[in-house]
Amino acid sequence: MSTATSKTTTYFNLIDGAWVSSSSGDAFENRNPANTDDVVGVFQRSTAADVADAIDAARLAYDRWRLVPAPRRAELLFRAAQLIAERKEALARDMTREMGKVLDETRGDVQEAIDMTFFMAGEGRRQYGQTVPSELRDKFAMSVRQPMGVAAIITPWNFPMAIPSWKIIPALVCGNTVVFKPATLTPLSALNFVKILEEAGVPRGVVNLVTGGGGEVGSAMIVSDDVRIVSFTGSTDVGRTVSQHAAPSFKKVHLEMGGKNVVMVMDDANLELAVEGCLWGGFGTTGQRCTAASRVVVHERVYEAFLEQFVARAKGLTVGDGLDPNTQMGPLVSQGQLDTVMQYLEIGRSEGARLMCGGRRPSGAMYANGFFHEPTIFADVAPSMRIAQEEIFGPVVSVVPCRSFDEAVAIGNGVQYGLSASIYTQDINRAFAAMRDMYTGIFYVNAPTIGAEVHLPFGGTKATGNGHREAGVAALDVFSEWKSVYVDFSGRLQRAQIDTADL
Ligand code: UN1
Image 1 (cartoon, rainbow, N blue to C red):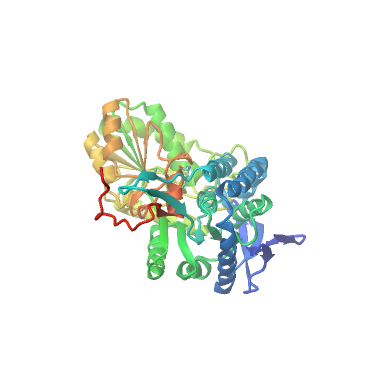
Image 2 (cartoon, helix red, strand yellow; image 1 turned 135 degrees about the vertical axis):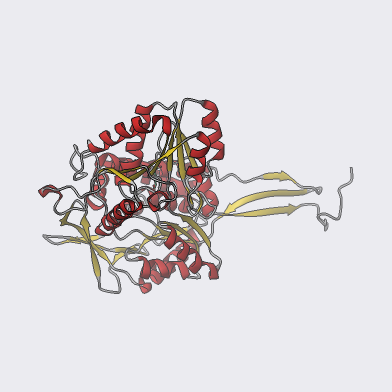
């Protein structure tokens, strides 16, 4: 898995049960975003040749794995969930060190992987199909889920263990084998996860890990004829490319992409609760969630009161190293992400939005070597502004005034994305109307836009997804295909739709 020198540890790919270096002979560094002097580890910069080896291993392993009874496959996954739970604290610390979010949140990320693994392992004894009466005599009809083959898994850095678990665990319980490319910013959490699967007894070749960039590693996975499904979480732009490159080989493509999620605060809302929710939804994970509450639409009757409290609370957030228990918001994950945030500050200012707080990198020695940024709120944002339309993926919240519930819903729906939305109101009629009218994959009442649980479907509409849902039982639909089976035990030819059964 790794070799350590006095200074840094080098980590390897897992291909066909062996921890191996890339054929490139090249590696990349993973650094702590709170302190870039801290090298977390050195990882393989893999090539298309490494991917081909991993796909070959997965293809061969599939012949055996698909025939292992699903409840038996699931036993290994239950064991893996236990191992993750036993090591939760150490896994969370590694994750904060490589990704930056505060320890409470990385513990939550690991917990989400535990939850998903236990939940999906349970599917080893379900994966229910349908048994239906045939229209003909002496004929039996049913549907069964069948595995597909090699699954290519491409994951982002913001949920370094949770999101891989959403994909890899259902892929395995359904009987597929996996080639996994994690984000280059968070390879250690991915490796920790894969290592636990190996320890739990998942046979060689069933899960293969190949680290490296999307251009080289990801592309090779997507175009391969030996891969039957690609499951990708990341930006909408990259998702579109994945979809295009996968199309010629007709593989199944599951995409989970951007969001511009809205919290709607109505004039009868419990304002304190709404402020609390918007802080957590907007600045949790430093705003780097697909589900982040990056827009808040507030009824004009409570607009100023809401804004005053929201800004005061945002100013009070403690920014710092996520490993420090006093920190409430960690750094951005990378220089690139910080640059994006700073560009959107310029955009927001030039569009004429009112900057209420933040807008700068915090000063002081403790911030000098990290990608820190202050929690930032823009007010008086018009729905058409770029800061109200485009995903920023950082600690920037746009507050938009509205005159009515109907207007809030129209603004809420008026973006290209459709992941998550929420409403704060005491009025049950409005809550239900919003639940119906928001065209999103996830909806919350009196809670922010983040906080999905693993046993319900996760995903979104429009430019957020391509019609699939992960998590919940819906994940089985991503990682298996239906086979309808007819067994005729009449001993004669019976022609469906032509021969009718006697009464
Ligand atoms: C993501 O934003 O990429 O609902 C995933 C949530 C988390 C998962 C977020 N459980 O915010």
